[in-house]
Length: 334
Ligand code: FA5
Image 1 (tube, rainbow, N blue to C red):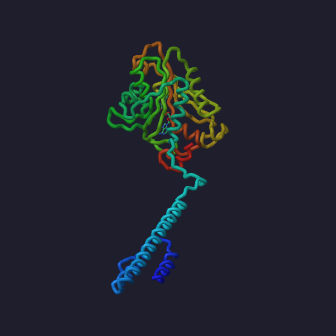
Image 2 (image 1 turned 45 degrees about the vertical axis):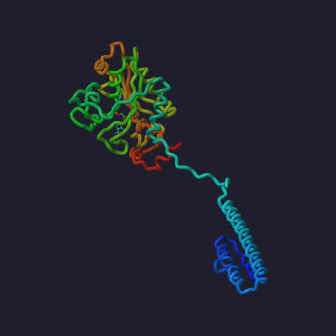
Image 3 (image 1 turned 120 degrees about the vertical axis):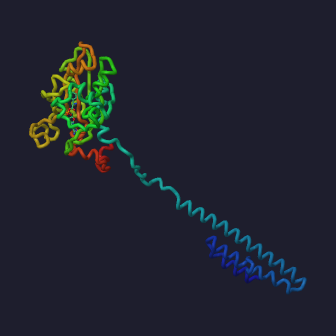
């Protein structure tokens, strides 16, 4: 019996996991285990010996049971400590960077322009992208067969409905709804059959309209010059006579070329200036079409958002805005 105990003690010394411990238990206490075998030998003994032998086996059995229990506790504690060590958090590691979305450069430009005009007291209105011919053209003093219709290549849905070619129809819609004075800008998508590196079939415009008593061309010049200074910084601004059917007189506004600083380059066709928007005093026919009183007048303007964004961020191809290449868009996530 003594040698079984010794054998057990030798074996348990080297055990360090639950599986091996289970095997050891079976080896000594299992059905065919060393201790169980001893019990079978009792029947061969005389009465006196039986008692002594039985007592010794029971002592050995409980010794082995206790030793196994103790080992089990040691193994459990070891496993727990090891997993705590392995799972511990290293608070000195740098954090993982999340992939944040960013505002699209066109949306960003619209927000920036809106903020400037809001700071001057302009409201923000919205119009319709699918528009009646009447609003896109006729009420803006562009009757059918008028040559000015050729200025904007139009997507027709049917004879009377178009994808709006500019944001100017919003002028009429707001004036029909509100009595003067009105003072608002209106951003949105517009559509033309047009496509090259500076023209896209879908692009964004921002319309502006101010109607009140005693409004002069000098007010138009003052508001737009201040807006351009706030958006582009200190650049030269030039008003050039132009033609739009819905304004009279009409003008186009240029800023000193941002690329060559006015020296003349390919981008500004060696003129030193870049055209940025169209404007003018609202044509009396347009005011008459919305039944505004005769003592009210005002000015309107319309600008291309992509053009503003391209100039501000030095982008040379309008398509980049719409290809949704994340590498391009990421550069604006500041
Ligand atoms: C107009 O659309 C007038 N409605 C602007 C206006 C409003 C004048 C109120 C007077 C009073 P124009 O066709 O020039 O004007 O377009 C305005 C701007 O839109 C242009 O200066 C240009 O920057 C931009 N633009 C025109 N076509 C495209 C296009 N296909 N892709 C991108 N931008 C364009």
